[in-house]
Length: 262
Image 1 (tube, rainbow, N blue to C red):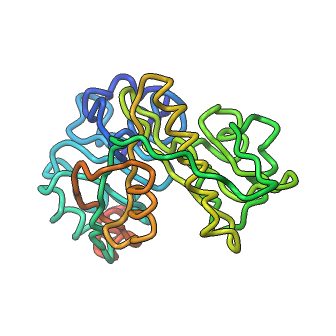
Image 2: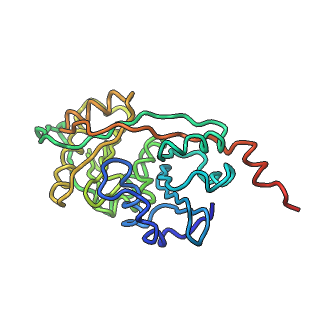
Image 3: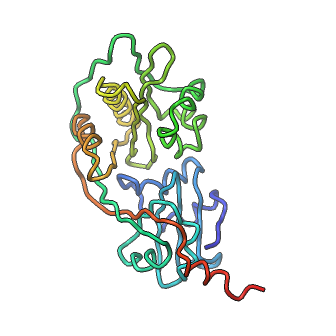
């Protein structure tokens, strides 16, 4: 696959869903933020296009147009593609694990929760970049779709729960679409079950509605805690789908890619 600068994505926008709820808003998010990566199988009239952001990939086109070696850049990612790509994905990586996913849309207005005494829930701004950077390593994924803590803090699309300037929970727009904003949330270890995440999600969802969009929520079918939080926040199931977690490029694909070189 040939990597192109992400600013060329508008030329390939027609390949990807528009006004779609869930992680399919990835392409619109990359268009709006210029955070992500773009690949095509060839520069002139491509038959396959892939756009990636925060470890997630949308892959579209003709799976017969490339060899398994061509998909090597998509190793170690979550790939969402039509069913006809399954054979190509299986031949391209040493393992491909299907993950059942659920997409929710906020349809009910939740009751405003009461955060614990001394906790302030507010919109985050550029000055909060260090607070985001101070989250534990397991929570660093929360700002990946904005290019890092500085990008998310300055985006205006994050709400945090703070206690004495320490960030305890954050909810943010993870993928910014034209109709939907797919949101995500993390809570610092030791501060769960205090309605901190719920408080941030409710505040963020109201903010999304004020922008004229609808909040969506994507999680694993088996993430009971996330599904419960979504339901409590007024989200209701819209659809289900499967994406594929890819391993390393398969040895046979690597051999194919390197054969014939002097």
